[in-house]
Length: 392
Ligand SMILES: Nc1ncnc2c1ncn2[C@@H]1O[C@H](COP(=O)(O)OS(=O)(=O)O)[C@@H](OP(=O)(O)O)[C@H]1O
Ligand SMILES: [Mg+2]
Ligand SMILES: [Mg+2]
Ligand SMILES: [Mg+2]
Image (tube, rainbow, N blue to C red; front, side):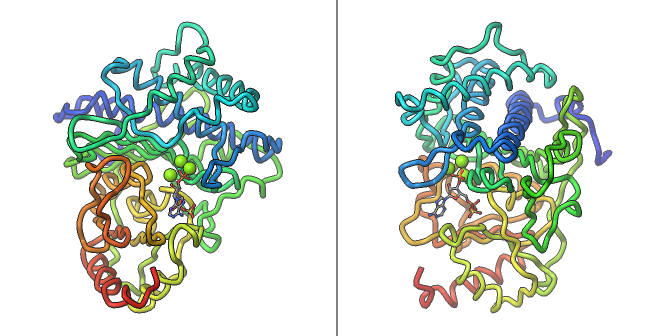
């Protein structure tokens, strides 16, 4: 079979299961990516700092987070009927509904309407009239599912790596479908992660700092992102270019994990922020396993994308004790890596459990994703050997 294929041909593939869900999810993520690119440009080049707010846990949330959540929620509801759509997502409307948030709320409404108006190029029918504020708030707050072991629900991280987003750096849009506790579809939009990794500066952690550009160049950097997706059990994962303008969706090519299994040649990725994962602990693991390359520190689920595309071999995350990993930070990435040929487990070797609600309950110590079993086993052995003295 041809490695490169058009989007349309995916629908006519033998396995029709989840075909419509995948099609709608991929389109929704493309729309969301373009929305985010616009907001990020505005934030970085026009200094629209009011568009960033701080949540109770001091983490940032922006116009883009709320707007993507509303837009994706609206698109899914239109496609499948509101009563059939259940979504677990990161954001809520609590702070957005406060009286002092009226200006940010009106920016969200404007951003959502702009995104939906331009969605026609992906074959998504826009709303007949512009969505009103209450409709946008409803679309966001409809994403109030708590997940669980039975039935079907979508899992959405509207902007993953919001910190990277506000810094003009990497971020991702992550959408997954979970059925009876299993992730069956995953779509990952990476607006600043070019199809060709050579366009990124590895030494600088794959950073793509927009502020280092002198002016926005929609024709240039805009068109460089990618969207990855996979269907559980298909043993295939795909990547499409993110295209701006009126071109719709470009053709998809199959992606596979790296074949490197020698630690000396392998590269591991991890969160940028030490607060999100212990750099000290992974440094020790890297040393004992014999990893020599400097770690690739990159914001967001772009790390999952890097493993699935074969740009790196290992992803490790060891959060501080007591931190509960959220399902939306992992669902889409896990299925994409697995179908691209890789392995994702907790540090005890068990698959991540998406059936326990909003959190990955029962997670053993941390998350280890690898291109192949040999590296995976080596990392798990190293974790066992050093865990008791780790202070984590
Ligand atoms: N304290 C702590 N420990 C562990 N994890 C945390 C913590 N705080 C936040 N988060 C979650 O991390 C998400 C970003 O993860 P990253 O791997 O991209 O981290 S980093 O930004 O590169 O440092 C980030 O996702 P977003 O909120 O979608 O950006 C959070 O869900
Ligand atoms: Mg996240
Ligand atoms: Mg998020
Ligand atoms: Mg967040």
